[in-house]
Length: 109
Image (cartoon, rainbow, N blue to C red):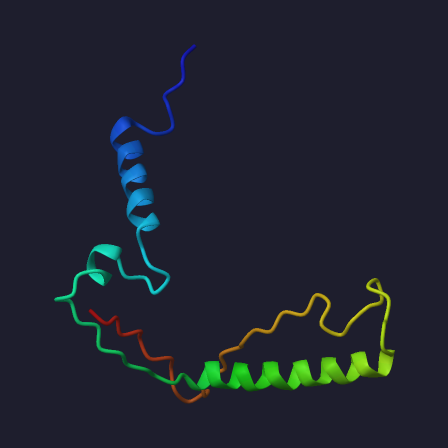
Protein backbone atom coordinates (compact mmCIF):
# COMPACT_ATOMS: atom_id res chain seq x y z
CA UNK A 1 0.00 0.00 0.00
CA UNK A 2 1.48 3.35 -1.03
CA UNK A 3 0.52 6.70 0.40
CA UNK A 4 0.11 10.01 -1.33
CA UNK A 5 2.81 12.47 -0.28
CA UNK A 6 1.50 15.25 1.92
CA UNK A 7 2.97 17.92 -0.37
CA UNK A 8 3.31 17.85 -4.15
CA UNK A 9 6.24 19.42 -6.02
CA UNK A 10 4.41 22.68 -6.74
CA UNK A 11 3.46 23.12 -3.08
CA UNK A 12 7.02 22.36 -1.95
CA UNK A 13 8.41 24.86 -4.46
CA UNK A 14 5.94 27.51 -3.29
CA UNK A 15 6.90 26.95 0.36
CA UNK A 16 10.61 27.08 -0.45
CA UNK A 17 10.04 30.31 -2.38
CA UNK A 18 8.17 31.76 0.59
CA UNK A 19 11.00 30.74 2.92
CA UNK A 20 13.56 32.47 0.67
CA UNK A 21 11.39 35.59 0.41
CA UNK A 22 10.84 35.77 4.18
CA UNK A 23 14.57 35.29 4.83
CA UNK A 24 15.19 38.49 2.87
CA UNK A 25 12.74 40.60 4.86
CA UNK A 26 14.14 43.28 7.12
CA UNK A 27 12.92 43.29 10.73
CA UNK A 28 10.69 46.22 9.71
CA UNK A 29 8.82 43.82 7.41
CA UNK A 30 9.95 45.39 4.11
CA UNK A 31 11.82 43.26 1.58
CA UNK A 32 15.52 44.03 1.13
CA UNK A 33 15.08 44.68 -2.62
CA UNK A 34 13.03 47.73 -1.63
CA UNK A 35 14.98 48.86 1.43
CA UNK A 36 18.25 49.00 -0.53
CA UNK A 37 16.77 50.82 -3.53
CA UNK A 38 17.67 54.53 -3.12
CA UNK A 39 14.69 55.57 -5.25
CA UNK A 40 12.20 54.08 -2.80
CA UNK A 41 10.67 56.33 -0.16
CA UNK A 42 9.34 55.21 3.19
CA UNK A 43 7.54 58.04 5.00
CA UNK A 44 7.06 57.22 8.67
CA UNK A 45 3.78 57.49 10.47
CA UNK A 46 2.50 56.60 13.89
CA UNK A 47 -0.76 55.85 15.57
CA UNK A 48 -1.72 55.43 19.20
CA UNK A 49 -4.05 52.64 20.16
CA UNK A 50 -5.84 53.37 23.44
CA UNK A 51 -5.92 49.64 24.27
CA UNK A 52 -2.16 49.26 23.72
CA UNK A 53 -1.57 52.42 25.77
CA UNK A 54 -3.65 50.99 28.60
CA UNK A 55 -1.74 47.70 28.43
CA UNK A 56 1.58 49.55 28.57
CA UNK A 57 0.48 51.53 31.64
CA UNK A 58 -0.87 48.40 33.32
CA UNK A 59 2.40 46.57 32.58
CA UNK A 60 4.41 49.40 34.18
CA UNK A 61 2.20 49.27 37.28
CA UNK A 62 2.62 45.51 37.56
CA UNK A 63 6.41 45.69 37.06
CA UNK A 64 6.66 48.41 39.72
CA UNK A 65 4.76 46.19 42.15
CA UNK A 66 7.00 43.26 41.24
CA UNK A 67 10.12 45.34 41.94
CA UNK A 68 8.76 46.43 45.32
CA UNK A 69 7.99 42.80 46.15
CA UNK A 70 11.54 41.73 45.20
CA UNK A 71 13.01 44.48 47.39
CA UNK A 72 10.98 43.18 50.34
CA UNK A 73 12.36 39.68 49.65
CA UNK A 74 15.90 40.87 50.36
CA UNK A 75 19.05 41.44 48.37
CA UNK A 76 19.55 37.89 47.10
CA UNK A 77 16.33 35.82 47.10
CA UNK A 78 16.69 32.20 45.98
CA UNK A 79 15.82 31.71 42.28
CA UNK A 80 13.22 29.08 43.19
CA UNK A 81 11.25 31.45 45.43
CA UNK A 82 7.88 32.29 43.84
CA UNK A 83 7.50 35.73 42.28
CA UNK A 84 4.23 37.61 41.64
CA UNK A 85 4.96 37.57 37.90
CA UNK A 86 5.35 33.78 37.70
CA UNK A 87 2.81 32.52 35.18
CA UNK A 88 1.19 35.90 34.71
CA UNK A 89 -0.55 36.59 31.41
CA UNK A 90 -2.14 39.97 30.79
CA UNK A 91 -4.96 40.10 28.29
CA UNK A 92 -7.81 42.37 27.30
CA UNK A 93 -11.53 41.68 27.50
CA UNK A 94 -13.73 43.58 25.07
CA UNK A 95 -16.97 44.64 26.71
CA UNK A 96 -18.97 46.68 24.19
CA UNK A 97 -21.81 48.87 25.46
CA UNK A 98 -25.00 46.83 25.80
CA UNK A 99 -27.00 49.29 23.71
CA UNK A 100 -24.59 49.28 20.73
CA UNK A 101 -23.63 46.28 18.63
CA UNK A 102 -19.99 45.77 17.73
CA UNK A 103 -19.33 47.55 14.41
CA UNK A 104 -18.00 45.43 11.54
CA UNK A 105 -14.26 45.44 11.01
CA UNK A 106 -13.17 47.72 8.17
CA UNK A 107 -10.23 46.20 6.31
CA UNK A 108 -7.76 48.73 4.96
CA UNK A 109 -6.50 48.11 1.45
